Image (cartoon, rainbow, N blue to C red; front, side, top):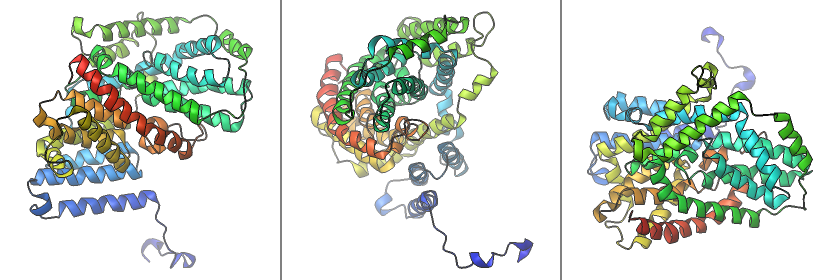
Length: 478
């Protein structure tokens, strides 16, 4: 055999077992081939070459993402390249995400989040809160939710917040002698709380929230809080109540305040880096809140704050190594997710999906319309398994479906986003729960996510239909 590559005798006839990645890769290629090589007439009637190719590539990519064929950044990069190579759209449209503020906001947010974490400021805030307000299991769970909301103003990304809170909870769990089963509940709570609490402020998740807002024309910090503040608080409270009901402790606990005080004492007085970090965070928050006055987009504010935190005299908080805190694969992934919606609109794919999946006319009753959007969003989310992938496919289709009603695009966009961003059944269906489902992080499994996720479905209908619709009518969005 050439180059000695003949299989060993014991390997001959051996059946190769296909794993999830391999099956997903084959399935994605099959989906692409079926759509791409199907005649343009019949089922795909009305789709141009560009639209059909965009549909084939997009669904193939979604299958790859859902089955974890490779890291999402590699899959996203391949999708972006294929859109250009196969002449589906111009590079300026494929990579349009970089011409706006979304990607730059994400970069700045990661840098700011890293500064709060590495400076010790976030840890100091968390320990002081735990010392003052936490005494037993119930207050630990409540404290996790409250801290997540508070820190969402300081750390504009859910993962660093969750890992910071988890490290503090580690001390609480150890000092309270919690059982392994109850430790799993607390670990799950940290990441479960990050899902709804990240929706209250646009900086709660500086990756996905601005992406969602972009489909409705964009939103300032104040506008987002006006739209999503009330629904976000309600779904956060409902999630907290459901968690306390579904995940009761095996026994009662008493938190050792002395050990927490020892941690606070160990931090010492606030360092210069902490003070500078706090000053920059306060400035960023002030600028976010006053965007309507100075007119500088939240993305540019976040980016410039992140950059200036490295300058001498005024900064020296961030250094060159902190660029490592900005994951390039997330940026590529976001670029691809935004490209699905953009290119899908240009090629006619979004309109075709809306005409194919949805009824011919949208219900005029806003409550029925909201319930329908929630139902379709959850179904698509269960099929695709990714918040960003669903936003890229579902939101443009829903906007095309509701366009004859003359609604403000932000309203159906945010209802769909709430239904998807606050929902999961399995860890992989939400990045916030996925990162915690490991032995060295939250240490929970899909058993816990299924238990809470199933209970959240009725809660989502309540929030999206009975809270968001009346609230949007009050503020004039409907």
